[in-house]
Length: 515
Image 1 (cartoon, rainbow, N blue to C red):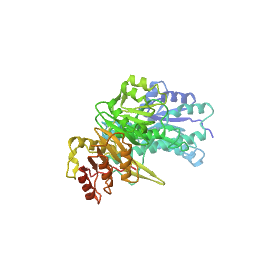
Image 2: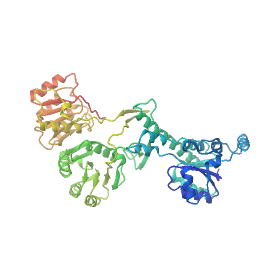
Image 3: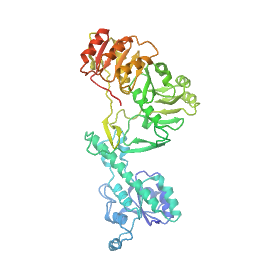
Image 4: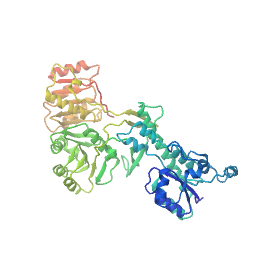
């Protein structure tokens, strides 16, 4: 069943395209009712409209808070056209049908994304009349078109020129409308949870918006899309700009996120190379070129086909080195023109530029999916910057250089899949053991992957040592200092092993499991 609307109510915050759309409606014989700033804009552009106060016979009041919340508006939208009782009621009150509602909502999300937004700013951008009209129109989709997406304007005008808006189209518009209001309320609910300090409410809404479709998921037989958390203003991969290369894949995005979340732990020039979400090389240095060389030297074999992240601007010298091997993605705060000219010669290499003008930490859940449910936790943003936060448990204390390596290795271990072991020296990783069922196996693998001597290196473990075997393994490789959480029932045995080998050991009291 097609409908040719006779009256449309237009009230939009995002006015992009609305003048052309309203003009097209007028040309199709649709009378337009409008409100506030939308009405003013349409009149300025020569479009004949009916002011909402003229339509309802009641003025806009309370600074515009009450204008469309009127029985004439909602009866016009909600009445069932082929219900005789409804028709009689409409006639007795002199009410007219409203066959189309064109509404998008106050910019609540944009408002709270501003670093300077106050609670009052946020509250004043909570739309009441808009969602009510949208839901009314969507509920009555059999007779009314609810338009919330400006990308539908041209499609609707095309349908009108072909005889009217089809039922199929109106159902799709209703689907979008309910999603639009659900998203809007979800963002508001999330904001108020944060405002009131409630991290894990009884009911949780996770509003997210599609950024792009993906060719496939982790594997070619899986379908996938990339969504961005609404209301989040934190610097990260979700808000990165792709400057060059093939479309990002599901695995590219996962790996890119792992790489950038690690590299942003460092303030000194740093480089992180990631493969399958695990770092295979990490280094800090005086400049990004040297940091990249050091990171690559840790495990150049695994770096092939990997993701590289920098916490600064990539220049031509760094770009030249990056061009020497096959990489999937390069991430940086920015790229010089020379660097882009060099890297863009690789047709498929994806280049991501990170916005560093956004917030550094925004509360959002770390979500793990299980069949039939979700596990929610806050993100592991805990870190240690000061040696005063470490507990020395061995006879020998670390010297200054060892402390630096311990703290560096600890930051890396936090981002390695459990069981995690990291060997590091002079601000660079030497060996990384990840994702093993046994901690001593991770220790051995990290040592076996080392391409240079571990003599004098620091060792980090993401969780406590259940036995002394990992310490004995480390000592045999020349490790001289260890950082770990502590807390095992065999801590004394582990400390004794360290003392026997002359190793300095410190406890953090913090565990960094990463499943």
